[in-house]
Length: 139
Image (cartoon, rainbow, N blue to C red; front, side):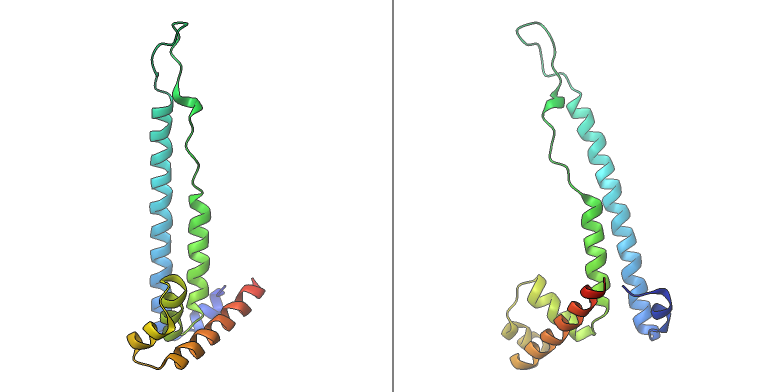
């Protein structure tokens, strides 16, 4: 994780990009929190509805049919962690990792996109993964 002093030691362009990412992450976390809150309220309204009369003349509620819970906060934390880790990489390393790991592109496809050779993509990817491994060991 980038500590506050290290964050300010970045060059101005990197600091601007990092601030943009952090602002975006904060907005995404708020959006997901509000969405989760709205879903829970809506779910409670549905679950408290009466189904109809059964044989005994009672009106059971739908409360017994609960939906699976979604751990929104955990997902947001995971996204923040991944973005922090990616901030440690150079722009080219980020492009290669995003394409190969997250998008599932082959090294050859990435090489064509970036206008470099496939062995160069492999080397960039391996260096990036090595950096990420070191970061994960420290976390």
